Length: 123
Image (cartoon, rainbow, N blue to C red; front, top):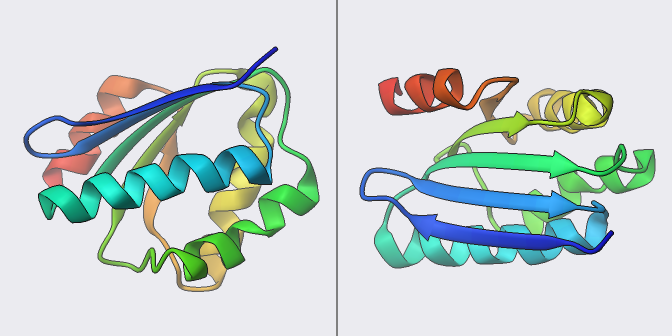
């Protein structure tokens, strides 16, 4: 399956959607666009909604530390991420754990879009 993404400023947060095969390369493309939109609108609340076709490879997940550092994604970003494919939640949870352990993330993984949005907007 191919990969598709969109990133849209919603007024009080940035919403990112990604669908398909996930890898470090697709993550680079997605986060490059997320950070561009966040900077453009001076809005650092991000609601991400992903639907992976399969779990992200472990090394690709580990490399999110470098990705966040390269794009200057600091704790000023508040990120609520939803993974809709239950089989891929484990790899996204691993990304979350790695970023939290390195102090690079103010965020949380969710299984429900409405719950994620409530949390994000309450921050």
